[in-house]
Image (cartoon, rainbow, N blue to C red; front, side):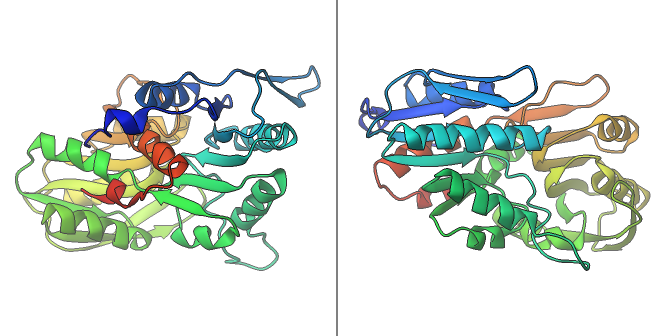
Length: 322
């Protein structure tokens, strides 16, 4: 991705960037890319577990960006974000943008059974109630979540960063595969950009953690595979699809997700799976795990450019260019 001109990257002192405790490494990388220091604040806990926040510098009249992913423990990091926003609002910040590289609760975006909440909408309401004036996020599980907000939402995609890496692999006979019906549009977009064929795996969900790939639409025999999804946690969808693809004659299998929220079950499944490499981003913190070929790509530049453009009221359309 092309870097911004030096004069664009120069920020006035009225711009402040703060980070909660969910992903400080990404926040520091974003600040390093932009060329400013991370704002000084204290985000800690009282002995009873309640969150304490103190902004350690003047923010009156400032354009403030708060970087916080809602990775596990999601509830704790959400409360940190709400309290930081409230503290900044009460300190007279001119505008507060919640930068949420991974938006938690996005899978609860509709009532798919009786007497259940729409928690993605609830989180949107709470962000606005806390005092957020704008939201910057990336690869929402469901794009309609943007409509849950009555404030501006800038929705970015990690695909420009991911596609740069995929192209560098120079894979021959590549087929892009959606591991379930819900990801068809995402996989279709990637396949169109790469000018490669598309295949689809149909799955049957047995429980919240167990899925079974049942049907394959498309030809994968003798092909290298790029499985495309927005996030993985237990890796059930990806590993089940990879097993089916391997049985149908696929060669190397690469899985590409924006958010890798891997738990112990997901790590164990990946170790035993037919996936040769899992490609993810640093939208949530990830550590290298023995037995799992994990490639982490940084989205610090992507988010950094978006922050610069939001502050300067410039278009963010170019960030979607591949």
